[in-house]
Length: 221
Image (tube, rainbow, N blue to C red; front, side, top):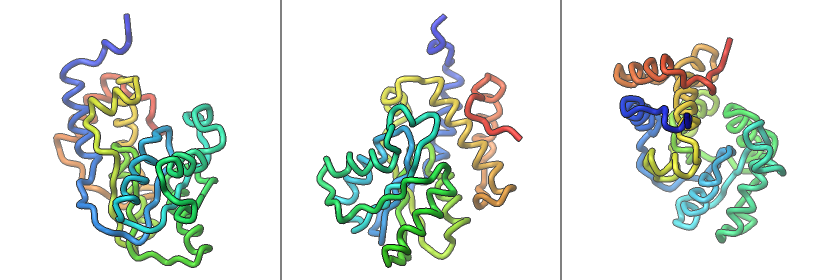
């Protein structure tokens, strides 16, 4: 049986609930700097470049080394490939700072902050650009590690169906939605991020998808 056919209508509904929760819905406004969080998703770099060209910020930090899920796609590192893509979209080289070491979201924020400091920049407002389902965790992490700046989040404006088509694996995307929500719930207990309210319907959707086996992206103790 094709595993892609195993996602039921009910599971789709649960996934949509979690997808909507992960997105912060922030109104975009000018910021001192944007930080593009490295991942498997080149749409992050595309969106960052588009927002730069719209005049929302003068400086970009692309951050990210490699992970098991990105090493083959981005062999020179996430940030390096993001930079190259942004350059191809018309972003000038002098507008881009590179942070090529980060291996998790906490590192993305902490190392990017250091790169900015080393460049003589002290932003008071930051726009974080991430995968659509990573907005909330990115926000919670930045608020924990960099509380003195105004943080807003953005991502490629895709519906869940369109995002799944862009990735090409619906079950993997559901696994990632569940895994990121687990981190939103658990990371505040470890001091990695600020606590976020999880509405009852979101928690119920999460529990249902856990029981259904969408667990490949969970952290384990």
